[in-house]
Image (cartoon, rainbow, N blue to C red; front, side, top):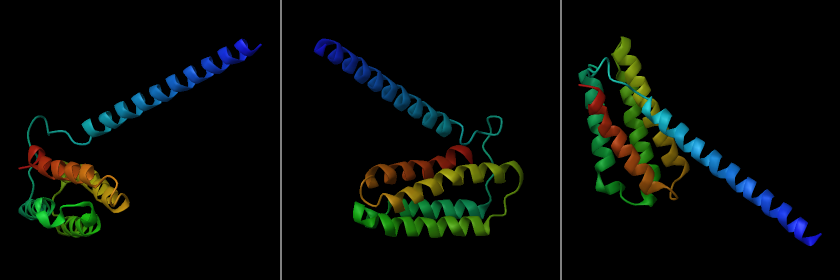
Length: 144
């Protein structure tokens, strides 16, 4: 009887671990798909960004690379500085059409990263900081 209970318990644990691993694998694939489809080139051509948008993105790149924001204790000031620049970008935006839509798609990821900075002040600071830096630099992969 004890052996039967042990076998049933072992089977249950094995199934639970498999289900958890499958869920984690699916979540990782879904995240990758979301990132891959966030923004696409316009038939292989970069979108045209207006000078105001380029200026605000350059300012955000300056902020994210500023050594004054190094260290997890700087998460909230960095988030505030980036949020301020992103708000200015949105306010001053004059882009229209597909360029405008592409910019908004790009901005969604930026705003998501800023939100993560605010929420994960210290735990994930280095990771989120690096992701934001990469995302800001990616602007030039899609816009000219």
